[in-house]
Amino acid sequence: MTTSHFSLARSLVEPPRRTGWFWRFEGPTFLVAGAMYAAWFVLVIFHDAIPWPLLMVLGGYVLALHFSLQHEAIHGWRSIPGWLRTAIVWPPISGWFPFELYRRAHTRHHRNTVLTFPGEDPESAYHRQEDWARYSRPWKAVLIFNQTFLGRLLISPFLRTWKLLQIETAKLRRGDFSDVPIWLGFFAGLAVVLWFVSAVCGMAVWEYYLFMVYPGFSLSMLRALIEHRYGTKAGERVAIVESNKVWGLLYLFNNMHLVHHLFPAMPWYQIPAFFRANRAALLAHSGDYHFKGYGQIARRHLLKPVFIPVHPIR
Image (cartoon, rainbow, N blue to C red; front, side):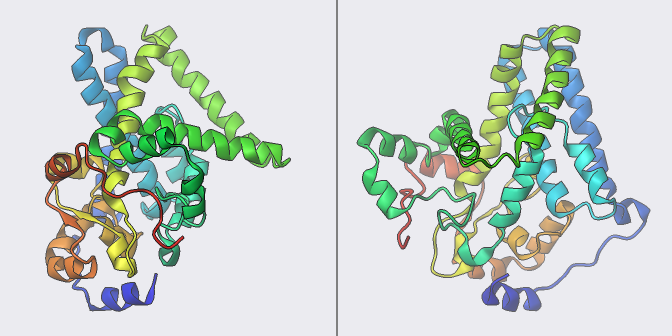
């Protein structure tokens, strides 16, 4: 936490917490996890009876929610031991990324002093100025399109997968095989998932990836579209998106992202009340980097980039 974050955190008001075993043992998170897996089973078992546009919406929502639960397992859910948190969210139903690699990268992302700095923040969308100068015009256009609402939905899964492949193959070329056991475990788990989807439920693997994995991946990456931009102060680098409960549940209220960076271990279901109690102070700290919902973001940035992804000082 930076000095400015720390000073703000000390001044904020904490609403009364709910008591009782349900809240003490984070019952809401268990309920969401159970509902998410139940919905996943229903969708893949009865996929033939669901029109494909509806399957994309529901399947995308469920798998994006799975990713949000993985994020919650990294930071919160402190009522159960770490190995159990991992076990609950580890099954690779999202189909593309080992949880352990996400946990490692996301932990580094929370160094607020280097937030948005390419090469130091592993989740930065920015590129170094010297790298940007070497890129071809078509590649720059692709990266700029990815900073729009439409681009994030359409091409971000491909760009993120390409970046992951570059990182992991570079490690192998350097003789670093430390991630190999992680990938072997991931592929073993994925094989079981795809066996169930295809052999038991009769859903072709390409259908699963097209109608569930791809939209889920896109929705997960959409949240990150607006979360961070460069600012001279740390608070100005983190967005606040006030949205309805459908989007809030999808992202487990991580859309109020400044609260998360101030208090990473705060349970997701406490974030809305905390935000309401401290709204004015949080908006001021963010430099009013604030949106009223994802509809507003779509109207402003459907084809207009949130920013040009070359870092202004790096």
